Length: 530
Ligand SMILES: C[S@@+](CC[C@H](N)C(=O)[O-])C[C@H]1O[C@@H](n2cnc3c(N)ncnc32)[C@H](O)[C@@H]1O
Image (cartoon, protein in one colour):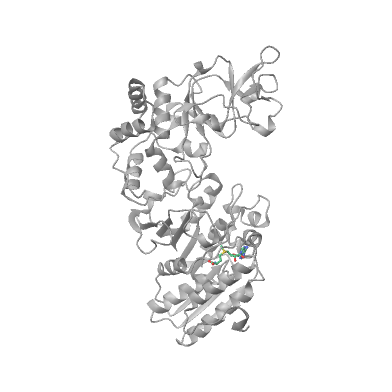
């Protein structure tokens, strides 16, 4: 392979920089559809260097894996960093996986350049480029939890990866092969992480850059259980801005880098350092916080959510929630998802009110739910505000009682993730109501929610306090009923007290709510930059 085929060589160029240029050259030559289908977004060299700097290793011989390697920018950055830090280093074995056959000549070019560079430093370098699917080839190592090294692959000292990201269907070959870590629709990146965790030596290190969506949510629950049982987190770097990190590829992801160590048993008191920066521009001056492992992930809990607090304000919030031991169920309150799936219920949904011939109930949609109030009706095309009451539609309706409605999704532009409105049965003279599927409703199955409970709960959900808590573990825009079932709540008396205070003031603005909640829970001021 001649250099001229791709790009001109620059004398004394570092392998990472050369590879980054190769990657840019390749990325320009392929269409967006090709990148999407392969989950192909190359790591900018500054991020690759940051990832590389997170490891430490003093061995003479090192075995490295880079699954989903692209042009191998991560391998190059890692090896450069090891060469400068580890003076004992004599030889490196590198295995990389890449399924895009049109990209592999660039990978080959990059690794032969790296080999030359290492030769000049008297370091022996052997590499293998494997074009098979990384998950399919190695997923058998996932099925045996007991046997540490059940894979045929010789284990690695360091695994570094920016894996592909895309959702797989439940019946995708890779999802089936990795079923030990899959519930529902998996994202391929989590399969890369789980398989890699198994391919590490004991005390081997892994560095991954991925979306942060695995931190919460039921689709990743089995994955979290599996992964964090054998990987002890050491360092986390969170990119707070969605736009900045991979801006040259237009990727809008909240991205996180983790560095962890393979352990037979993780230590709950192990210290984890959490760094955060907005994106690339402030990458060298991150905010740093340190926590015990069990403060950011409780492996005994049901959901095993990974919390990523990044500053004093977040820490203060985690401490407030940690001191609460209430939750919805404890107060005989439940949360369910609206049963009216609009596209399946078109026969029953009506645009306008008709009296006499049919019986109609109001139908509440996501757009009717506003912070602290329900706006209904709102006339919008294809969003009928009524639903017929008939024998067929009755299973979809719920009794007209007191509820808190909560949107199941927020948009990226919404200021708050949690948008909740109070609902009182006297809002409308009806026996039944319809709640659309993108709305969750909170209720007391046996009995009624009282006015102060509804206002107090709604105020908490809409507050900055809850929004910030939510953001510490949830990087996406979904608000799942399961997460809310587990969310810690203050004592019921406190919830009612907040409700009473607001009712007395007769001012339900978010500003007043935040003031009251700040006083009630001794919340420290939020940083300006947040
Ligand atoms: C997000 S890109 C990252 C590339 C490179 N690691 C970097 O950081 O620039 C992921 C790469 O994985 C490759 N890939 C996708 N699916 C794969 C699979 N199942 N096995 C191995 N590689 C895969 C893609 O072609 C793509 O080049």
